[in-house]
Image (cartoon, rainbow, N blue to C red; front, side):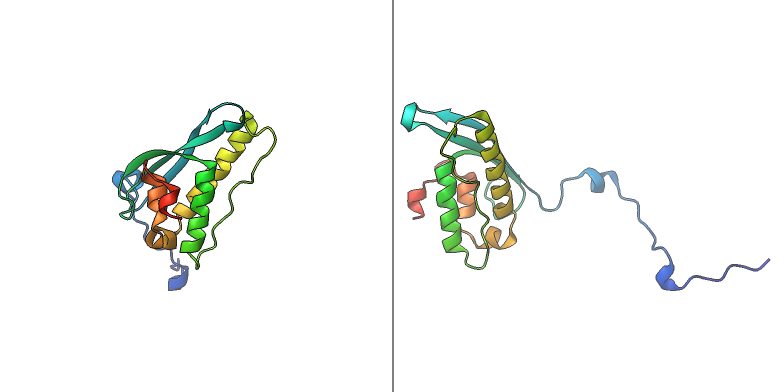
Amino acid sequence: MEASPKKPEALQRPDIKQQSFAEIYGVPENFLEIEVRSPQTHGIARKMYTDYEIVCRTNIPVFKLKSSVVRRRYSDFECFREILERESTRVSIPSLPGKVFTNRFSDEVIEARREGLEKFLQTVAGHPLLQTGSKVLCAFIQDPQWDKNQWI
């Protein structure tokens, strides 16, 4: 019986190394988790507003804290986005969820806005040029004393 001909090198399977438990389940080399949650509506009548909790967990060195929780209003996000646009001319900053003028305090509207704000924040916080080049990014996400007037 003849031996089967040897396959060309390009068709041979590479040796596959088994990953260790630590490699599979360990902390990734760089990770960034941003969550926008727990909307709370404050005030009465025309003075009502909703703010959102921003939870950040990361091991990326540019962020001063490994874990942080802050609260921000939609108007804070608007100002933050404007500052990012001025600061980062090489990066296209995504838009925020649109302004709502009717039923803006309904559960559905608040949840849709929360989802949009989370997507926005995950996108900008995950951008490498913004992580290294933005002065306002880490402050907005992590500083409980963040004040838009410091950045205008």
